[in-house]
Length: 399
Image 1 (cartoon, rainbow, N blue to C red):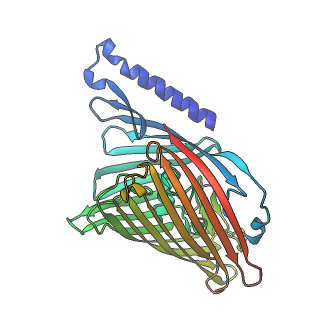
Image 2 (cartoon, rainbow, N blue to C red):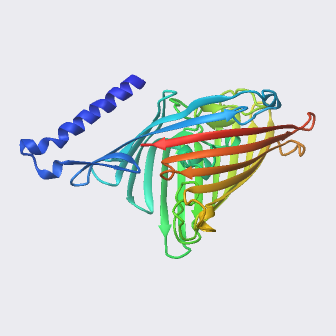
Image 3 (cartoon, rainbow, N blue to C red):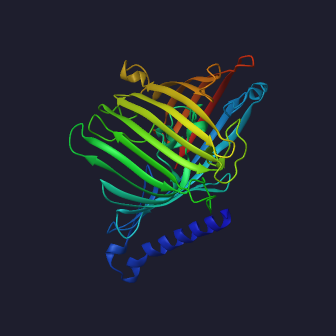
């Protein structure tokens, strides 16, 4: 699959090169291809603007000790002497538009694991009514939808694993309604297969249904990016999102559908999962704030049981330069607190994360170095408390 993908990309490059030489053969000048490099990578655009191809790559190098992954069970605290270097992500991104500037497409491929992550076509002629079909990260949570290259900390929070809807296949309507001033809203409504990334079938006749409404209460959209690198004027949002799905799965990830701890691998239609979240974001002159509050009900349709999960995180960051100009302008500090309760009926069961990070932006999120220290604490009704302190450093570069 990877070989075929790379061969197709090489062939596309040859076609573009041939296309750009048409002027030498007497073709119309509107067929010329202009090449430039932007934040979206190498961009090939026809002179009439109706065709555009963007090609970019991203590499993420990481060192972690005593482990890289967030602990999932109490057994994960026993290995305290591990150190590792790794290429955590290696992405190839291809996007652009064809025929008209509002008919867009996007592909994203994980080279290291050989996974096609995103493939979608977007019709975005009107800002208030847009359409998308394919596979992508569902916009259920801002934390998950923001690219891993645009995060403030090394990676997402403790609660992401339990509550993300991750990548799904389907269709969605979305847009921005701007009636002036505080009357600025975004919305998403989607029907999805609900079987996760790479699914080629559904286990039953049920689909996943998703909706999100976002109030941009200061009159402008807030970009899906961590931090406030542009020292922007005040912007903020309050959003509510909900999902319902019946499938064999109690969680989703980049790998597709899976099971949370304490749940067995499901049979077709075994679990009905209903979940919602409320989130806030605020940016102003280098300061950034974000939070999410989650609830999730897992209904076992075979064993007739219901489990309710809950969690939240609070995250903030700022550039010390905004307070005193003797600090380096490229330096950002950020922190996060997260709490996850795997069963709300057992009050003693708590998992917490406290993290602190510093970022050095060589060229924004496209070229940055992040160092992070995190403290995990697990409490259980029947087990002694377990703690772990983790250190990670990461270099992320796009070109």
